[in-house]
Length: 279
Image (tube, rainbow, N blue to C red; front, side, top):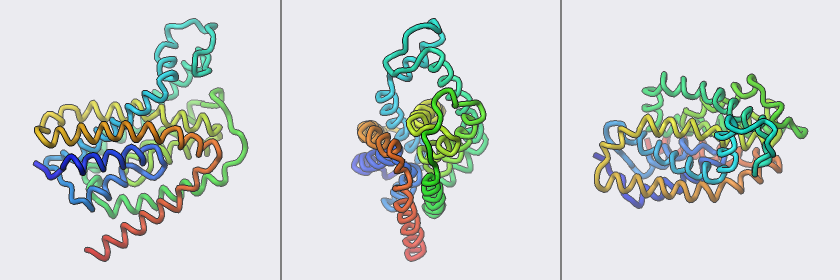
């Protein structure tokens, strides 16, 4: 059914865990790495494997931001006058953030369901992923123009949330960084750096969780070594992802998101050159 070994899965899981949170496109790196390693899984299994590597990084987000997630989920059952929770959010702020996360999830959900077949084809195209990495680099470089402190939760309006949601929808294309597009979108919309990063990470919870649920049935076709390899890759993605979140938050707070642009350009151009020379 495929040639995915445990060693390849662990390597891909580590790659996913690092690049999911660094704004360099985890999907683009996975497509390119899988192509170079010659990883093949029949019957659409490669997309299912990728989804579960993303699920590993979802676990990292949930563990890292458990306070914010707990307060969002419990806010409908708490009095508005209750003291701020451990994350520092008041009950109205937690309710507002939760509502905006739900609304911003809609664009990616609609695009993902309508264009799933298109993305199934793109997930195995290294040249397409490389080209989109060049786009990601341009987007990150543009954040150098963002100045000022930006607005907090009170400035997270419906319009701003939906625009960040559409930025996340674009990241379904391999090579477009989800964290890069959503954090950049928040910064361009005038949010402060802390909120832009936190909103981007929390927005990953329903997006990645929903994709994993939709692919859960496909996992039943994985047996033996392939199932074990997928589990090993998923666990590796969770551990490495958790280690990367705090570091990236510091990078964003210092306004250095554009640092990753040259890397995206270099990887994209190198991959395109390799494909042209070898093909």
